[in-house]
Length: 400
Image (cartoon, rainbow, N blue to C red; front, top):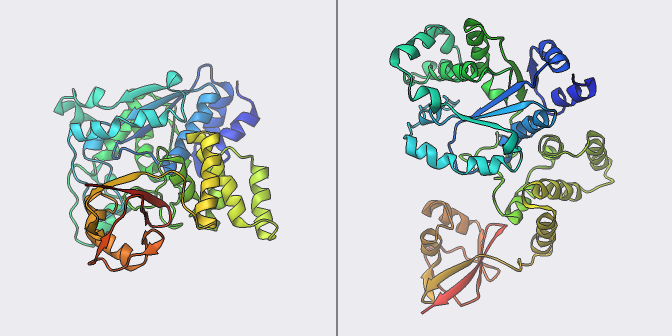
């Protein structure tokens, strides 16, 4: 039995939609066994960002309520990937590439979920050994028309763009995952609703009770507009240094403060509303409230002491226009260098063109002086400080 207060908490804060809410409420109230709560992720990057944690924190809430979280690593489906809203097909990946991306996933997920209580599965368990006939029989439960209804495919066809044959099959495979795991409930980002709805129909066909869905919103990134994504350059990874994480949270638009409090922290709703009301009434500076937000989030992944130290350093560097006490070192040989060449060779910028733009905009400083001429040579001294953008500092070490 689950109290209504617990159920309201599970299905309330941060939830975008619950599909078959009444059905799920009844299961939560009267379940004779813990529900099997599924979540699947395709490993595509070595880092997990705060956008992922919106779902994982909800999974943790179900885990704390006594349910069984089934965390599925889509090591088979990640090889070709779920079609996205871009106009091109995803690049196919090898099993080795996917495995490399998956290695750090569980370590990072373990910052939120209790892995000792989590059932961890991989969908290569059934797909790698599946005969072609078995796959075709699964596919026979669906129609091509249904799979092609997705907005991304409609848009591609309007623009005359190709749809590769494996793409419409992806929801079929995701649906069968729920059959294999006997999922009672799936907690997922709202962008995965179509795929998981297919699972409900397939479970019925296989004689299972269809899973309910808890859909979570897509956290907006540091740009304040688009969903958080490493590929969009607006992500805050949960395994980056405390100072970097703190600084990125401080850079989010003020309009996202409430969203980040509600989706990324455990701060009570009454307190969140108090912060927002205080900002609107101009009783509190948004930067001060954002600092509270940043400390809460950083403390969850780096510890409270590291979060406080990051806050102090942020104040010193960005409000006091100072420099951090500790910074990574860049070792070079000889004093005379083209600074743009140095940035590229040391992987301090993503590309030569990006480094050139950054320099032209005054975003690269040497001992606090901007260096805007990307074609000039500069004399670098031992102990000089190189600043790239507002948050990255490096100490130069000259050898030879």
